[in-house]
Every structure is written in C-alpha cells, then in structure tokens.
Length: 176
Length: 190
Image (cartoon, rainbow over all chains, first blue to last red; front, side, top):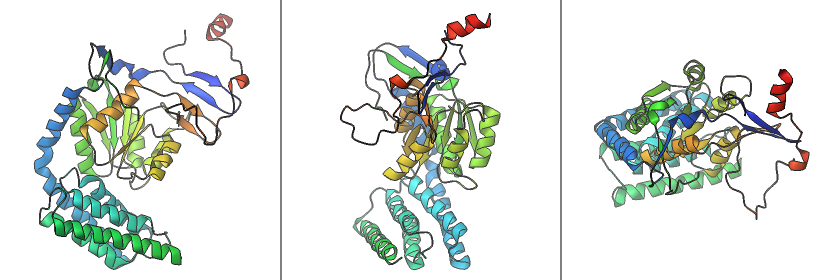
C-alpha cells in the first residue's frame, strides 16, 4: 500500500500520469440521500453577500474613479505599454464587478472597452475619444443609478458603443 | 466543469477544514470572495494582492486551495500558475488553482487550462458557481499529467469515442515503462 504522501506515477513513453495523495479528502463527509450541492451553505453565503450590498454603490464609484484616473494618465502620458495595461486592468475590474454591484449595463460597456483595448494590436494607437465615451457612459450609468438592464436610452448607448468598438477594431487591425 | 448531480450519497464539504488563499489585486473582489467562503463555513482565508505576494503566501501558509485573479500587476495569475506548477520546485505543485476572472473568451479558457489551472470561474461571481468549483476540486480531483510541454491537471474531463482532435499523448499502455511494485521496493529495502 502506498505511503500517505506518495505520488503514484504511471510512466509512459511520452508522458507521466501522476496521482498525488488526496489530502482534501479530510474535508469531505458523506451523509444520506440528497442533492450533491449543499443548498444551505449556498444560502448562507448569499445572505452574507447580501449584507455587503450596502457597500456596493460606494465600491462601484471607487472602481470608476480608478478607471477615470487610468484614462487621465493615458491622456497625459500617452498610450504606452504601462498606461495601456493599467487602463485595461481598470476596465476589466469594472467588467467583472459591475453585475455583482447591481450595474450589469456598466459591465457591458466595460466589456466593450476591454475589447477596444485588448483586440487592437499592441503597437496600434487606440482612438482615445472612443475610450472617453465608454468611461463617461459608465460614469453616467452609475451616477443615474441605472440598475439592471437599464432603460431604452441607456441600452441604446451600450449598443452604439459596442458597434463602434466592433467597427474600429476591424478597421484598425485591417489597416495595420 | 462536471455538474454535480443528485446522488444516492450526499457529499458535504467541510469548509472549516480547508485553508484558502485568495489572490486578487482588487480589494473589493477579495472581500466578496472571503465573504462567500466564510458563508460556506470557511475560517482560514488568507489574502494577497498580487502574484508576487501570492507566491510568498503560498509558500508561507501552505493553503489547500488557491483562488486567483488573472489580470494582476507584477505578475499575473497565469504566470503565478506556471511558477507553482513546477514539479520539485515547491511544496505542493499539485494545489488546486481556481482562476476567477473577467476573461470569459474561449481562447482565454483554453490558455488557462494549458497553463495548469484546475478550474475556471468567470465573473460575475455567484455563491453557487464558487461552491461548485470548490466541490469539484475537493471531491473530484484529476490526476496530473507531465509531458515535455505541460505539467498540470489532466485536461481530459470526458472521454469521447468520436473525438477527432489531435492526439497529444501517443504513449499507449504498450509503452508503459515497468516500475517495481511498492511492496517489492519495501521488501528490497529490508
């Protein structure tokens, strides 16, 4: 019988299959019949997350300040690797968090901004007015507290920005 | 990801027995993940704010599971994964790594998988999705594969008889290099 810490290895001509010890077994308990998912644990976690929700509006504003600051640095210092990466990280954070914070439409616009930065080849300049329009739209959505999928106007703004990004990315990458 | 199904035996994860390391440059996201893990019953949740301090915390705290962001300054989640998936270079190159990221494009998922990430969790995060990823790495651990170009969890989650893609592993069972049985090794050592 292998020792508790031993990795069992099957050695083939061009690869190895390794079976490390299953240390995390310590956290498994099996009980009677039922769902594989512990719905009570999920409900507890959702309740804990809901208690944090009072902070979400402030946190969203903080994220937008970071995004605006990154945009301002790009304006002042130009679009070099470092400023471009910082702008992308800030947009990416908004993309990942906005839905959790209750602003999925802001997340959708941030997704378009991420594409604008990430899908245009690194040596090509990103059109800054379009960056500004994305950042300003995200700011407006949060300022007006547009929750959920938003209204007709805000959805139209998001669609127009997505379309503009698609066109610019296709045009710029084709030209380069 | 294997969706857990209702089964005859109900599996419960005791989060209190697991030590987590959450690596994310965004303090809000770290707080959300920590809140969810505590909600599940977890107690030991360590945090790091970039890849470098995450690697240091991995060495110092010996976590059971890492939950890491992709986009981070200094070095990112993929670079962190590459550094951890070095057999012999650290205490636990097999540690489950759950990548929590705003990247959801297919090419990103494949890139993460080919770097050795165990589970991929796209933002926005939900309690259920996080629970499922933890359940998967705890209850359904995959063997590790070591080739010239890859060391990480087996990337074959399913076996399809009609698979038509490239066959990366050609060494069938006929090519197994015989190893001395452990019991014989033990006898030989006496």
